[in-house]
Amino acid sequence: EVQLVESGGGLVKPGGSLRLSCAASGFTFSSYSMNWVRQAPGKGLEGVASISRTSSYISYGDSVKGRFTISRDNAKNSLYLQMNSLRVEDTAVYYCARDKPSSSWVDASDIWGQGTMVTVSS
Amino acid sequence: DIVMTQSPDSLAVSLGERATIHCKSSQSLLYISNNKNYLAWYQQKPGQPPKLLIYWASTRESGVPDRFSGSGSGTDFTLTISSLQAEDVAVYYCQQYYSTPLTFGGGTKVEIK
Image (cartoon, rainbow over all chains, first blue to last red; front, side, top):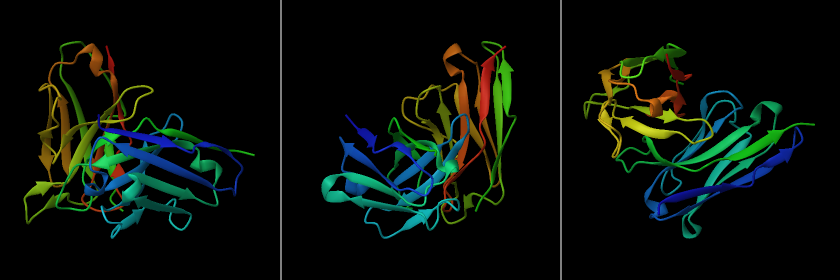
């Protein structure tokens, strides 16, 4: 079964750090671009970061640029999001999402994890 | 960044009737070299992750009922549910993947009238 499972969420104080992980199974992880997408409570979807199959291309949303770092380990079938200098407004469910195979380095996302909650509060 | 604007914010439709959602992008999503529009539609039900319905603006994802259809090109797009079913109650989002960062519309909540 094709699956993405996020972990690493929790409660952190403003200014703190957190590292999210996404474990992929059921498909050849190294063949797909991957994304982190977040959703604040009661709000819409926001693209956080994207990474190509070999990590050659990386992109960040404006609100997290310079604070968050996306990475992947194809040998471990895992995607990561290192979040530093966290702010109250970073509070959200963070989803890991797989792109459809494509000649472009980004595409529509056809597989999503269930998400992990990050709460930034003093 | 490309800004995606959806309308309406919410709509109530009777069972069996048509629901239409609009999405407008701040720049064209049509890639001339392959004549494809880099636009996707997702459905999200409460407590669940988003589900891909439509990509390339009009291609239905495998397993998606044919009552869902996408249309449009350039900067203006539409998602149509031809005959609303109870299980279609959800929030619908458009997303552009023409350029990074990926951006989403604000969402449209579809309810039963």
